[in-house]
Structure formats: structure tokens, C-alpha cells
Length: 391
Ligand SMILES: Nc1ncnc2c1ncn2[C@@H]1O[C@H](COP(=O)(O)OP(=O)(O)O)[C@@H](O)[C@H]1O
Ligand SMILES: [Mg+2]
Image 1: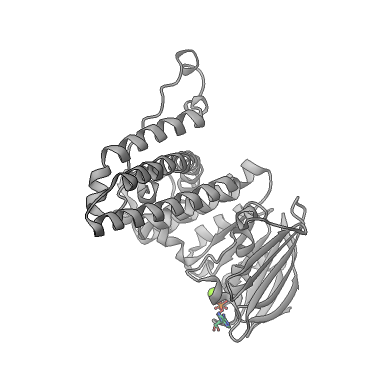
Image 2: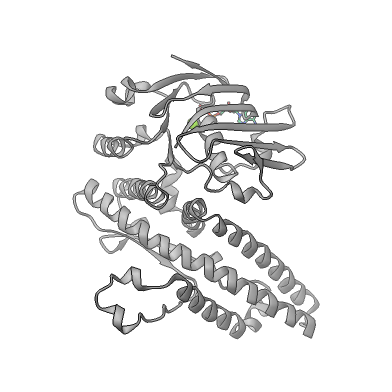
């Protein structure tokens, strides 16, 4: 798939933009603060329905106006067009192929995209929430149901936390509060099991692909990504007749794993109910899960060099591209925001050879840092003060 045309109204520093892109490499260059990342951000917004930066929807509205609109026309895909409208009142609406979406979550999967940015190092350096988000974005693009499960889970978790605080304030858990806690725990176990099972499964697939890339770039260093649930769930044992000759991953039934997690999670929540009441807060569940990233058996965050971390992060991103492509047969659109200044020649050339055949948007403050062959075949736009010009 590729973005053929992008139109923006009042998005960030663009009052209007209407641009046509090529199916290969498209480059935005210009000084800092001119609007290069803003374009990338608007494209990724079509993929996940929000900003990839730490920005709220209201921050994306051009100052002094009251709404923004993004519309994208795609080529070579089942999705032909996507349009999103956000008003400062909080109203948000989206259309895909001309049809209004009842829920914004249905946007997921319409445009597949992977974004690379200097902040990707946060995946290694920062806390578990960054790693959970990384998994959740890829999985939601593949399975919109994951997005809805997360939404329901978080909503229920917030309600449960409210109730726990309330119990703490009044100093008592009456029988109705107690029964309500049981209801919340049931729901959390059901949604949570689906979330944890999918994350663990996709993490294992990502690990395989990322380890291979990492080995190639580093000359054989071993990268591992292990999903670490906040409670342990034992997978059911494979049946004896299939256990011998079928590869391990294929003879585990996701639904059976989900059921096992659900049972175990619910048992834990029930057993620790009084402790959660005492602490006035939910203590267990996938909201606390993590992905442990190791290189050669040692925690990358604590023992890795800057170069090893960059290689690992690059490998994880390249793995996401492959995962999306292999699972859907659709090629994701790649967004490379300011990444070449941070990569040495070896990593740059591996990245460039990996993106061949994918539509790619590259932003840079200096065209000089991009190899000649990339520029030769690219559509190049000069970006200045919220306007772009094809050169
Ligand atoms: N809501 C907004 N309204 C108007 N301008 C904005 C808004 N949000 C960001 N900007 C402007 O966008 C510019 C940053 O754009 P960005 O794409 O991040 O720059 P770069 O070209 O360095 O990637 C800044 O000049 C900032 O003031
Ligand atoms: Mg930028």
C-alpha cells in the first residue's frame, strides 16, 4: 500500500496542505521547526487515530483555529481513502472508504504503518509502558479487537480503582462493593487474558525476526525479547500425539492459553482482594507487564552500549515491518523521522536495503546525510513554515 495523496487542514503548522507522493521514497527536508515531523505525524495519525508524540489531539489543531482534518488517498490496497476530523470540543470522526466509522478503533488496520524516530531508544531505556505500547500498536494494527480489549480493560480498571479508593475512604467494604469488585475482577480477567496472551504471542514472533536482524547487523550478538507477565500463567501442556513432531509454537492453541491465563488471573485477583482493598489500588494485571530485552543474556538497558541499543531498536522496528507484511500480505508505509543522523554507515545501509519495495517517508535537516542512490529515485520536498514545495 502507499499514500498517494495527503490533504491537511489546520493540522499543526499547516493551514492547508495538498500533496501527492510517489510509491517509493519521499523525502522532506528543511530547517528545524518547519513542519517535517508534523507531516509524518499526520500520516501515522491515520494509522492509529492519535499522535505518536506525547501530544493530545487539541495540541494538533493549528493555533487560532477550532478543528483539524487529515485525509489520505491510498494506492494499491483495499483501503482507498481515510479521513479524520477533530474539533476542539473533543468531537472526533473518521471515515474509511467513504464510510463513517461507528468507533474510532475501527481505523486500526486501515493504514498499516511503522514509524522510526530518535525516541525509539526509549523502548530500551524507559519504563515498561513504552514497551507495552510498542507491542499494542503493532497488535492493534493486526487485530483491532486488541485495541477494543485494551479500551474495555482500562475502563474497567479505572472503575475498579475508583471503587477501591472509595472503600478506603469510607473504611469499609459492604457486601455490594464486594460483589461489584467480583464483577470487575471477572471482566478484568477476561479482557486481561486476551491482552496478555496476544502480547506474549506477538512478542515471541517479534523476537524471532528481531534477533535475526540484530545478528546480521552486529555480527552474531544474541537479542532476546521476553514478555514478562505480572502474574505467571502456565500454558496447557500440548497433547502427547502432536508434541513430538509439530514445532512448539504451532501446537499451542491461543484460546486454551487465554483460558489458562484467565483462570489464573481471576484466582490471583480473588486471593489478593483484601490486599488490593487495603492498598486502595489495583496491584495485578497486564497494566504492569513488561518486555525484558536482553543482549547476550544481559539486560540491555543496564549493560548495553549506545551502539548495541541502537542496533537492537532498529532490529525491533525492522521486525515490526516484516511481521505486519507477513501477517497481512500488505506492505506497511514506513515513516523515518530524523533517523539517519543517528545511524552509522553500516546501520544506515542495512536500514535502506530493508525498506526497498516499501513506500517510505524520510525527514531530514540535511540532504547530505542521505546516500545518493536514495535521493536519485526519490520525490524530494522542501519544507518551510508549514508549506512544502516539490523540488
Ligand atoms: N498546534 C500548532 N499550531 C501551530 N503551529 C504548531 C502547532 N504545533 C506545532 N507547531 C509548530 O510546528 C513546528 C514544529 O514542526 P515539526 O514538524 O516538529 O518540525 P521539524 O521540521 O523540525 O520536524 C514548530 O514551529 C511549532 O511551533
Ligand atoms: Mg522533526
